[in-house]
Length: 161
Image (cartoon, rainbow, N blue to C red; front, side):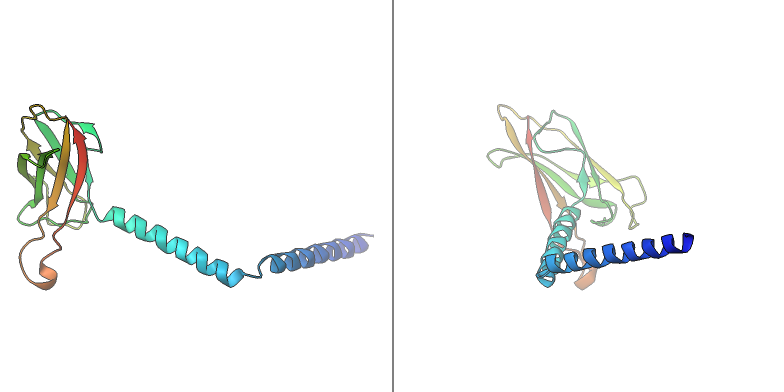
């Protein structure tokens, strides 16, 4: 009796597996194209993530209201490298592009590492009648040729006063 039950169970499982397998294959006639689309989607997602990782993180986010003095903290995330203890500089401009403040980003931590390091800068400014502007973070790619020098880059964060 147990032997018959086992045989019937195996037969039922085999039939279900065969039906499922056939159904799965008929739904995947365009499988090579779907795989290519999935791979392209993955590449796009990876490229977007890499673009975000190109810049360090900052304690100021878009449309934050800044008052003077303001402490700017930039975490290099191991993406930007310091030169002589400086990561680069911070520039604050109003909505007309007039510079309101400028300072270098420095750290008291060990900056000669591939690990994340927090660099700081304090900006003193007079916003007068301005309502908004940009906080621009510039890297210091260092001096030298080839791989010794990095790529000069910057990014901006819209802010309000």
